[in-house]
Image (cartoon, rainbow, N blue to C red):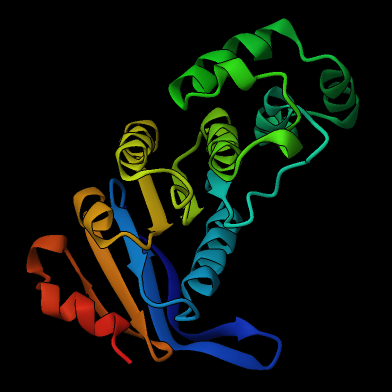
Length: 221
């Protein structure tokens, strides 16, 4: 069943309007990619979609652009934090002191999938940008859910690795809404592409219906 989330609304922060007249609904199985220049409103739209999905009691995994990791904690413990809201405070506190074997047994294969198993016990403050990004993805994979929301979730890795990680997102989550900067990757991943420019949606269509010219127009001054 298609889930209507935003209906002809203006979105922004405080008194600042970033996007006007926005509507958005998500159907099961859709992989939606947001395209547009920096400042076009992709992060604002993603944040609203995330909040509305949570309000609708949809289990959502989130990969924010700033990763939102705890620098002093290991890769394993940062990944573990994907399920903190599934347990009470005592369980979480003791698990963060010493990760339970059951959880470790679930996390290590995920770290293997994203190429981080050798770094499992390293504090994330010592990792490269690409490794931190993959830790944030591992946390989302451990959380699981119906939808993954990702704000440039593969921007810090090379194109080959990015394609592998996007394939994993598609395999692990029934639906996804991502902001991506690489148009080629976006078109290969998406079932639906939304183009943002000038505070509005310029197009909302399947990749097969989009010409290169329509996409390039998003980035023109």
